[in-house]
Image (cartoon, rainbow over all chains, first blue to last red; front, side, top):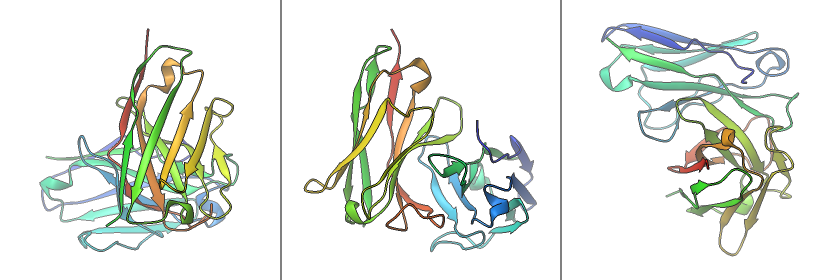
Amino acid sequence: QSVLTQPPSVSGAPGQRVTISCTGSSSNIGAHYDVHWYQQLPGEAPKLLISGNSNRPSGVPDRFSGSKSGTSASLTITGLQSEDEADYYCQSYDNSLSIFYVFGTGTKVTVL
Amino acid sequence: EVQLLESGGGLVQPGGSMRLSCAASGFNLSRQTVIWVRQAPGKGLECVSGISGTGGGTYYADSVKGRFTVSRDKSENTLYLQMNSLRAEDTAVYYCAKGNIDYFSSRNFFDSWGQGTLVSVAS
């Protein structure tokens, strides 16, 4: 069971803005560890979307943005497109776990 | 170009063993953190094991500790996951993923992923 909680699903019409939350605790996000985001298209492997809370790797459209505050982080998609329909996962470091790296529960984004 | 290619998955009976491989190209596996992440059918991502590039320290989730062993072959630039005493709940697609830092740092993120290999544990 993940220690990073995300809403199971969010949806929006094309062109709209959607935000996905990632809620942690004092042993992960609240301990000032970075949050990273991954996109998993249907049938594919996860792909890095945002690193270090808000940095987009080369090739990631600028409609994707990330932020972090306190024990939570958020991924925002501005100007939703049909190809953004996918599962999204946050990831951080947790100093209470033996494996240290933890992923969020995942959020399915549906484009209406 | 960095590539990771998993292999070795398949059907195994409960209590059985299986060894997964992750062949790396485009980077030196001994110099980067690499982790194994699994995804049960219809479920989320779970990091189950990892190995530090520097020093080769190994790490395991509580769910697999004592049953799974991660190792690497420097000459083959390949990572392995030996899985013993397999259970039905180990059924998942297993991915290997490369970190951006050579040790198990809090700043690690995973910038390259393999395509995954399916492990099914059933009688």
